[in-house]
Length: 64
Image 1 (cartoon, one colour):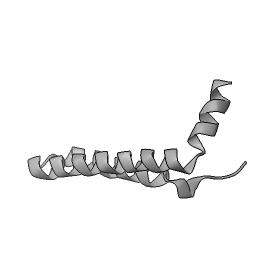
Image 2 (cartoon, helix red, strand yellow; image 1 turned 45 degrees about the vertical axis):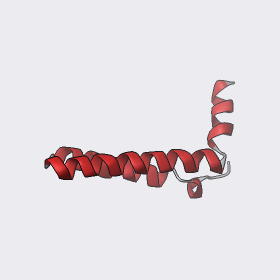
Image 3 (cartoon, helix red, strand yellow; image 1 turned 90 degrees about the vertical axis):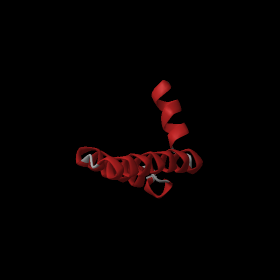
Image 4 (cartoon, one colour; image 1 turned 60 degrees about the horizontal axis):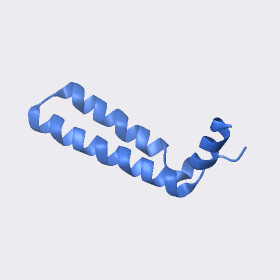
């Protein structure tokens, strides 16, 4: 029951767009921090987070 409600909530483009935007903004902030402090591990984390934001976008909705 909870899974079905989550799937319905996640399938809406508005929710997916907001989550994707939040992930990309978070990744950009981590990247700026990493570049300013020369922490290259954090830069790798930022690239991964931005990639997750790109895959979470509303264009990725697949109908079952």
